[in-house]
Image 1 (cartoon, rainbow, N blue to C red):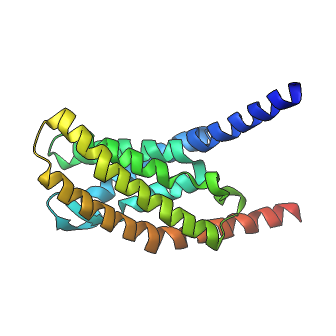
Image 2: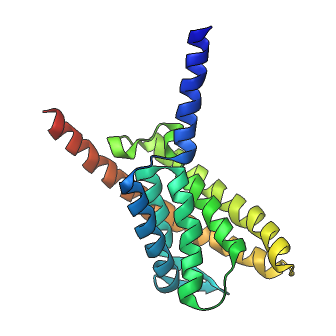
Length: 201
């Protein structure tokens, strides 16, 4: 009975690590810096492709933070980063999009769920494919479902423009995550693997 309970507790603790992420002083610093960079890149690091929607390099940040620290920290980077982008952009606060960016970033940070351990140097081609699929599904859910719901709840407006922005956001952010984010994760994982090999030797 105690062994079964221990196994359940172990699974629970592992699952919570997947969801909450790895928290330490470094994580807090990473989230703070990541959110600031996300906000800056949303404003100045992209090309406008639709009304208030850019092909932005900002989504490189949740990829890095999610890869190093997990889903919870990535979620905060997406949410707080969008709030900061609204602040420095001066166009008012759009919490429907902040929530959407938080949800999308959460899915990006779920790498440990399918075995990727960037900190330990583990990131395979199979995991990269799963990462791409999970990230795109997360973007579609965040911007195609969650953001419109909160647009209705918060703004109470018509959703035609919101859906058009959502399609543009899914396509542009998916491109950045796949084309730039995946090679970046391979580089970080490879570097961490080399560091671990040096320590073991």
